[in-house]
Image 1 (cartoon, rainbow, N blue to C red):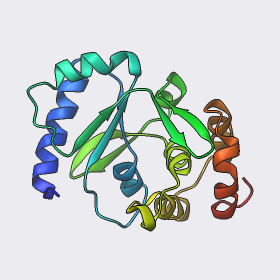
Image 2 (image 1 turned 135 degrees about the horizontal axis):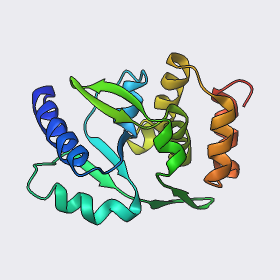
Image 3 (image 1 turned 90 degrees about the horizontal axis):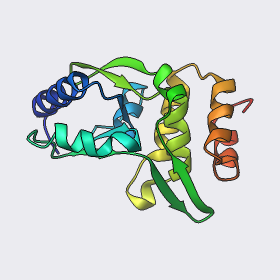
Image 4 (image 1 turned 120 degrees about the vertical axis):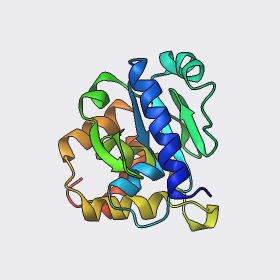
Length: 173
């Protein structure tokens, strides 16, 4: 696990490179959950980009030390209920929130999209992960746009997978 200063320096470099290249990106997963109120420590930083931009991103970041960073484009998540897609699109980009992470102002995935992502995974302590715990903290600390959340669940075609869990954590879903 890195210290905050190392994360600050690396995240600043990543931000500068991606912004200078004009590539849309967001911090998501656990680091975004932390921005939205999760109380656990950040051990890595996940960055989501459009699948079409992934090669360009890797070229732009080729000489930046991004150990403890994962840069991900469009991807499929395999679950016991089948394959669920997760990707960055224009609607997500329009709703990006700018927040501080390790002292760096960064674009953070919309709260509702991060909830959908974590609800697809649904990993808990028995897998050494914190998806369900992160959702509970995000829901407790932030106001959720339920209409947008429902829309994203539908857009990603994951209702069967995520709705039972989210009904237990979010009233009126």
